[in-house]
Image (cartoon, rainbow, N blue to C red; front, side, top):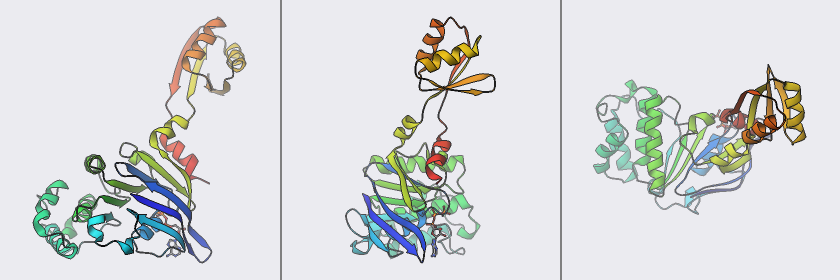
Length: 291
Ligand SMILES: Nc1ncnc2c1ncn2[C@@H]1O[C@H](COP(=O)(O)OP(=O)(O)OP(=O)(O)O)[C@@H](O)[C@H]1O
């Protein structure tokens, strides 16, 4: 589990993180989302003991990072690409990191396989693509088999196949009871990957909820065309719908398609079109993340 309590980091008058409290639960993949400069990396760096909070606390399984007895076995992090020496092969990097982490080199081959780097393992990592470097960073984070995983913008540089691979890996980790916190500045990128969302803007939490409730909160919008638009407008409003015009159609919020169809039938106005606009996830995110 990851918890932050009124976590804050100020740089002079810049409130990079301004009193953030949230929980990332075991068995769930939590998306940590915000536009550029909203305070995500600063929060993750405090969680990982790389930066001291101005105030508040960040805990991993109820302990501060500094108090963990054996960090690699408790938390794995992917913070930036390019941590490997470019002249070192992927395998040599992992072996060195395994020794540093006290994890033993026995896991290295299995991890190379798990992240899909077996064929490239004996090539220098300097020649790896961005996506391959991400895979190597994920393997490094997994060396100590930690229950908690933190990934800062891991989808950057991954192609669709890489994203699908990451999704399976993180879902499997959560299914086995692990906690996953993954940051991004694009909700759509994570939408198929996460269970919960924590949205930050200007260093403050704007929303912390299951992803499904974000869809639910978005008002369902109907698009309606009929023989007598003026009459439709009147009858929709008379039963509580909020109506606006969009081109040659009416947009209606506050009514179900069943309601709208029945009301139009009752008013004897033939309908030519009745469709439901699915909520645009990225728009919902932007509405919450922009202040
Ligand atoms: N060392 C620092 N000194 C001064 N200001 C900083 C420092 N580190 C971060 N900031 C500021 O704090 C704010 C939050 O930055 P942070 O990197 O945490 O955002 P972010 O959400 O991770 O953004 P991105 O998606 O671009 O990585 C920004 O305004 C940034 O300029």
